Length: 119
Image (cartoon, rainbow, N blue to C red; front, side, top):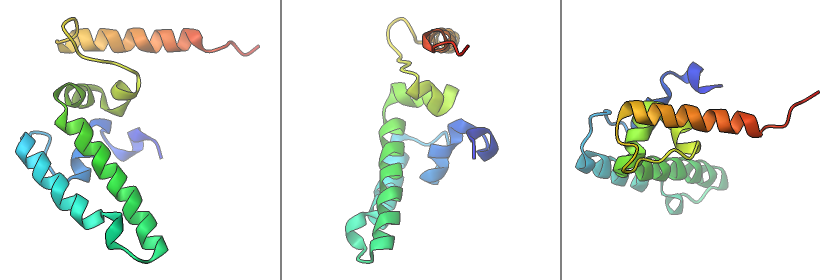
């Protein structure tokens, strides 16, 4: 299943933690702690349950790491996981939505240029 089929790509992490995109840092932290306790792998003895819990725990940790970092959260809110995995970073030169969009497009073009041509 692709991200387009799942709905907006920049809402998945919020749904994972059962919080709104407008959630405060404290709400994110509280939700993370709640779900991390539920899915902590050490709480499960059965191998198949432990595997499921480990996978969910890792996804929750990743969501928390992204949503607690102001820069990563801004990129995620605008471009979803693609913006984060493309190497896009905010900084003194990238602090407006239009600048972020232009930089993401530039990175996409560079990535396409680096791909070998199939003849």
